[in-house]
Length: 81
Image (tube, rainbow, N blue to C red; front, side, top):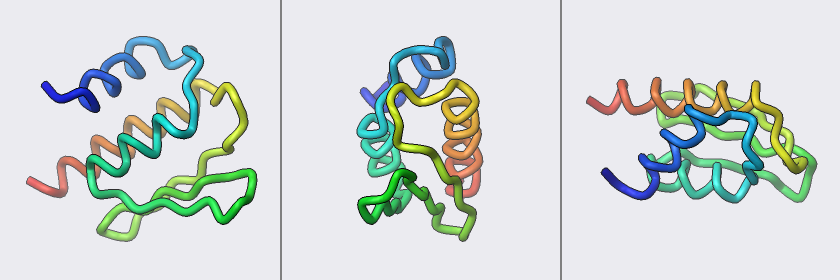
């Protein structure tokens, strides 16, 4: 299990944790998901099939966005199979 997979499991088990946008970016890089923040208050993650997820870059990230991010990553992993 890779470091990113462990982080994803930690997020799944504790979405209320003090998660930072840099952690989400790192996981996105690992799974080949592009993102853009353009210096704004939100980061837009885009999957290779065109789906997108917008996450506010405030700290800490609200648990609902962590849950949505996990689902987004899982759906992207399923399409790569």
